[in-house]
Structure formats: structure tokens, C-alpha cells
Amino acid sequence: MIPSAVLAGLEPYRERIGQAAGFLTVAQYLAGWFICTAIRRKGTSAGVSPLRFIGGCGLSILQVQYSQKLQAPALVWTGIFTLIFSLLYSVWFWWYTPTNLRGPFFRLAAGTTAVTAGLCAYGAQDNSPEVMYRLGMVLTALALGFIALPLAQLRTIIRAKSSAGLPLPAILASTGATILWLLYGLLINNTFIVVQKAIAMVLCTVQLSLFIIYPASASTGERKKTQ
Image (cartoon, rainbow, N blue to C red; front, top):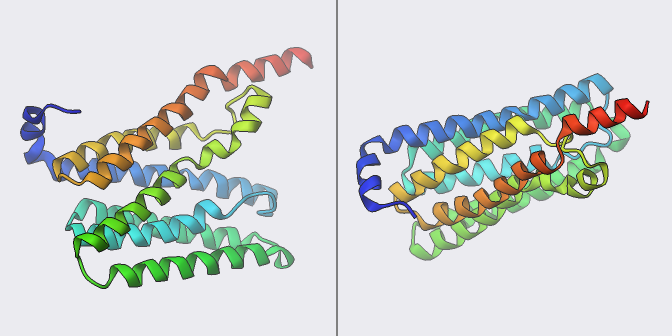
């Protein structure tokens, strides 16, 4: 994938690369503020899914635990920051959710808490290769699902022929972070991080291609002409 000579030359900068990747990952989570702002303007969270926020809490906790086992400081502090943001966003979502509509929020929170607690308990057993392998598999699946969340709007984007609903800044930050984490994974020789980020690169490429195929500006222009 990357010549060994290049990786050897980048080895002294491994932690800096990890820190840069962590910064972009945190920047990706900042995109949640735009969702929170939209909720505040509407005065309600009705019609918005809390999955990104609550799921982000569980994923961040698992990433911190796994990163501690890897002894990868850059991954640990990144997970801590993303957990803080996810918790703040979740509280914001709950605050703007009408009392009679909080049932699904609490059910999702309870389910996420139960699954996260179970996986943490399993991971706390030891650092054996078997435990690390299984945790790595679970984290890979969850992380990829989280990255692919914007693609849930794919049908709407195709119908409207507009990518206006996609968070471009978040996707750009995710793409940059993915590239750097892929490089970091190669430098620390972690197969799960490499595989996870290689697949994530495909997902990011698909999302970025939607902005070319269905440009938001073109769709806006067409709507103005028809008015």
C-alpha cells in the first residue's frame, strides 16, 4: 500500500500524525453542532434521529478502552474528546425533545448503554490476542456504520438530485482523518485500524462523489428558475 521506506521515514512523526488525525476526528464531531442549532431553531428535536449522538457515546467509550490496550495516546485522547461532544449533543437533544416523545430516546440510550457495558466488561478480562481480535472486529463494524450514517439519506439525495442534505465539512474532516488514521495504523502495525480505515476511505469517496454527481448549487438554481 505504502512503501516501507516511506513508513520508516515517517516513523519519528507517528504521534504527530496521530494527533493530526485526532484533531480532524474531533472536527468531524463538531458538525453535530449544526444539527443542534437546527433543533434549537425549530424548538424541537422531532424528526431528527439521536442515533448519531447516543451511538457516538458508546463508540467513543469502546474506542478509549481499545486504545488504552493498544497503548496509543493519540487514539485515547481522541476518544475522550469525541465522548465529551457526544454527551453534550445527547443532552441537548434530550432537552429539546418533548416529554411525550422521549420514549424512543431513552430506549436507544438504554440499549446502547447495555451493549457498551457488556463489551467493556468483556474487554476488561485481559489483553489476550483473542479478546483484542474480537474487540477490534466489533469496533471496526461500529466505526464503519458511524461513518456511513450520511448515506442513510442516499434515496432522498437521488430523488432530489441534490447533495444539500449532506454535511460537507464533516465528510471532508472524516476523509482527512481517515487518511491519517490509515497511515497511523500502518505505522503502529495494527491490522484492524488499517482495514477499518481502508474501507472507510471507500465510504468517504462515495459520499464525496455525491457532491459531484448531485451538486447542491445546481439543484438550488433549478428551483429558482421554476419559481
